Length: 312
Image 1 (cartoon, rainbow, N blue to C red):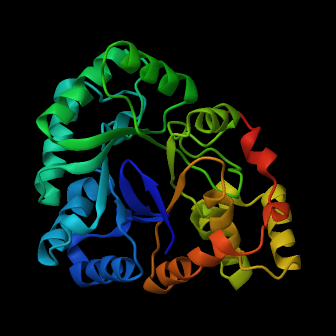
Image 2: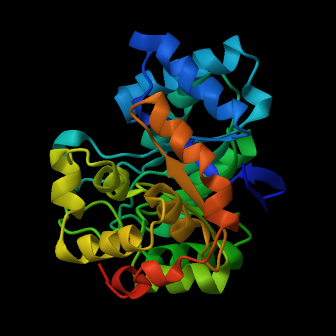
């Protein structure tokens, strides 16, 4: 496992995406988490919306059962809109406090290391949002605060406000970022890395925690000859991404290592969230981290501009 030192902590470059673990199958959930820990992983990502709290509940049982809380950097997300009204924000103080207190209860901990806002609500001033999150920091609910699916302009506005008013700003951003360009927008409340956000990370060196970092296994499935699930096909299967895959195949490179290499070799601190449906997939990812970071430069196999210059 490779690590990055950020926020005074040594964090594994690959974070475990816990969105699929559930209390209905705790032995399987524990196997995934124990395997991740055994490979040297110490960065776990979850959210209140995953399983409508059940994911956090399963994770909480694992944290308690194995005495694992102090072994991991734990991040969760709140403020997700109601599924029936995805464009109606939920970032009021009452809504966020409801979410974080229920997250802490489910996770069986008195604090999380990183608390992200899962979506933005551009109708709400950044001042109001930051005041709420700083209250959570003061109460000890979280050690650091971050955002997910925010655009560069709003992040910059919030950081400027925090600096001007003696508040703690955001320490991390969580966008969708992978080697594959997104072909079809399935959910327009999600934010993919675009050129403005990319430049913002370069300028500020803000920690970037990338979800869908392997494009839902797109390149690996092509290499293995596996059928593409419908969602993966709709989001990522296009001529541009097929051309990238052809370059990977022509070079005889490992698609998993190339996908990780693209995300982890950026000019700002990046972390790849890895979610897997099978233990074999998780182990494949964890085994290729070293080669992704230390192996041959594969920059010629990807087209950075296709992602970097595509503004959302």
